[in-house]
Length: 178
Image 1 (cartoon, rainbow, N blue to C red):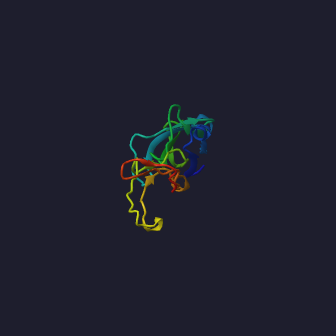
Image 2: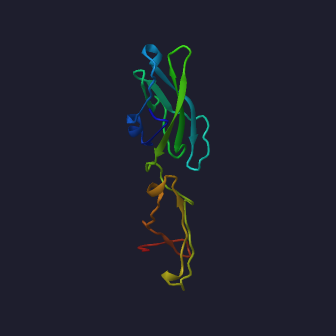
Image 3: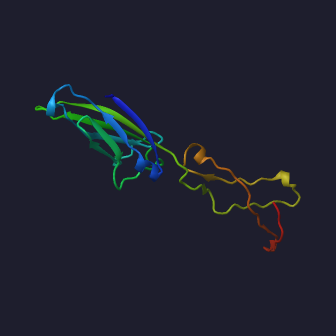
């Protein structure tokens, strides 16, 4: 019995397939009138900037014993933190009395980032021309890349694997070292 539930799960499929959230409510009526049915009344999905992502509701809710329900990621549905970072669900809880009595509870689900995206270079080739009169300390080449993962997963580290030097005749200079 809570007015607000919070949970989180990874965007890695094995993790969110195993994830579930149990919610519950109570009704002081007796018998069938006290049995509760749970449904998702509203789902609002937002990206990391808080923008609403329309038509994205991957969750399923199953009523269990008339007092609890389990929320899971539905069959065939996926979670991707780069598309939706947070889901706000409004759960409708309705008893089986006549007339039906109902209430709602809120559920917040945060999708945690995984390192599931490759960095993308801002160019496929980076070129520089350097005067031979300059020392190696007098020139630089700016390169760039982006990674849409979040936090440490999106931090980039650069290293030079190899270089190719070409002389004025467009001939590769052998044994070139950075």
